[in-house]
Length: 434
Ligand code: AMX
Image 1 (cartoon, helix red, strand yellow):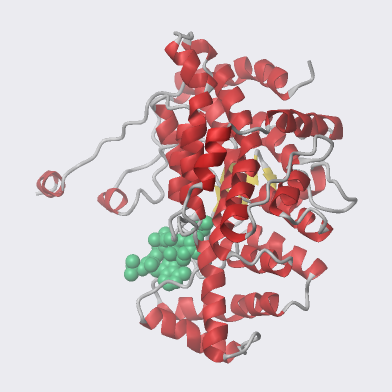
Image 2 (cartoon, rainbow, N blue to C red; image 1 turned 60 degrees about the horizontal axis):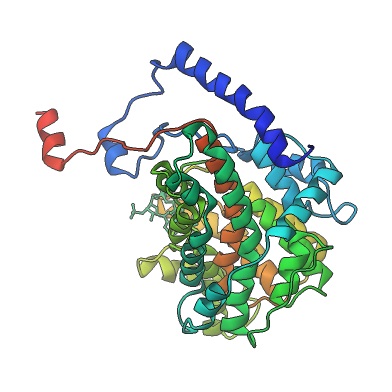
């Protein structure tokens, strides 16, 4: 009683009823037209997905279960007074739509700690990966391997009633979230450090444990940053590549391990989650070519123009839905202003904020010239000594699991069907409008 799962069990019939009423009362109403442009253009603007954990407004940015980022920061329990919220609280919010108490947050930390083990064969698998296998590929590999222990897959094989799907989906999702830091830290230690494995400390929170395992546990600033980082990257409504992919693959009743692994393969793309590594690489390359660690705005402008002239994007800027500065960027900027305002890398990120939007606007085709979440995260991690850019998307992936798996539990609780939109050939479209 009082647990997250017990609360979900209470909420599910209410939400099932809401969905039923939605179908009965409004099922045949139109959400708008689907144009040929939408079919060609990556389905931009087509309202064709159900996603409850968060909603993105193009001007205001993300709201998690109705709460903006400043509201989340104010409402969710924090480890340090006036500090960053616990990601465990975010998980409760994403799963239930309700703001948890400090005791509920603690129950999540304890629950996750009790699930935080990975089988030896997965450790060995990771230990045998060549160091130049990208950390995201290793993460995906490990998740697929962990799938051996999927409770959902076993329950399905044993003939579980479809009304009960959400239960093993919840168990798998919590297990995945609990195991991810172990996998992620092992990858970091193997690829970049001496391969040290730090055991889980049952008495501390998720972020402190993850930081311990990465080797940054003593660094309180880093632990706070990690809490913020893990909260901010959880969810960005349902249409982005990692969220949509997890949902799509899950719709075939692939279990949470397989579904999330698929989503993470999408997160590993440079136009999506990999952009955070690309941003830092881009800045460091600029610094190297200019032989400085604090380029002027004019130098940044020239370097941007070179990037664009060579047919590349400026990573960390633009968005498919957002049309203003990403509040996830703003929140990280506030963290930087509070904790590291004199850091030269932060000053470069700040200077880019002043010049890049004008450059992109002048180019004339970018729909959103403003920075997104990925423009900022790298410089914060660098400040605390996590310098390995190739690793950044793994941390994004750990966080993204919170959002997409919360939704996956609801996908099964609501009995959402297998996804199967209709495709068209170019000829069929051409003939249609002859
Ligand atoms: N630099 C240069 N050109 C850009 C650009 C940028 N940052 N952002 C968009 N453009 C270009 C597009 O490539 C496109 O060019 P094309 O017509 O020649 O193909 C044109 O502007 C119009 O694109 P759009 O409608 O504004 O954007 P989109 O919805 O197609 O793509 C996104 C959105 C994020 C992929 C794109 O802005 C981009 O590539 N940004 C850089 C990579 C990045 O930061 N990705 C992370 C996004 C956040 C996340 O998922 N984590």
